[in-house]
Length: 301
Image 1: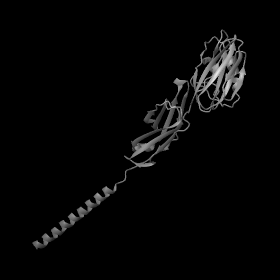
Image 2 (image 1 turned 180 degrees about the vertical axis):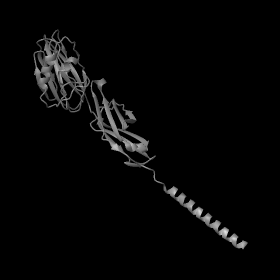
Image 3 (image 1 turned 90 degrees about the vertical axis):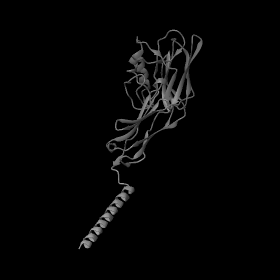
Image 4 (image 1 turned 90 degrees about the horizontal axis):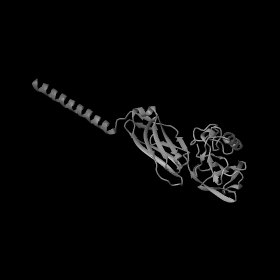
């Protein structure tokens, strides 16, 4: 899922520029643009449905938004000035003015953008390939006064792979082995949690901290002892990045399962040597006793 937000409309009245987010009632009808497959009904305001960035839903999205929200008595609320957007994703932005006849309503950015739809009071843009932190300026002139709205976008790098490694694929009962899970190239680490699982049982969980914006590998290691029942379950690793408090979304990835073969412990060389010595000692004692017994019988005769 992606951390995109759909920006919608507000009725005319007064001056100034506002970015508005669709209310829940409108979102159930309007499709949101993001990478992935289309989902017509979002689960929540924080988890918008997915859609291919190159799909043909842009005009339909604008139409459904207008159809739902035009004339609606439901209160809309001001959109966030800061959004978390996955690296390389697209973002749909709606520049909306409060006056009915704004002049020079534009979205200022060096990024590639297309105009999806427009009317006198608003314009709906699709901005492509957001690969670094950006500031989008939505500006227009209303009643001779120019207004701008700074729209801050912070790029994050969500978990795309979760790699699980077992130090051994076959171990004896009671042997120590290591489970390692790596989530490559993620940022920020804040909000990332990695969980090691045996079947559905949580073996270890680690929550990361750090606000560095450059991607880095997140690695979790856990040492444990092999048990007989370990061979009955798959080992796996889950990574979850929760950026909802910062205007983003919730991203969840799971590794491929790994299997561990658990064997009965083999006797050690030391135990074999000890057993051999004991057997030889018993044979020697037996030989001595037999020799002593024969000697005694001879002396009696």
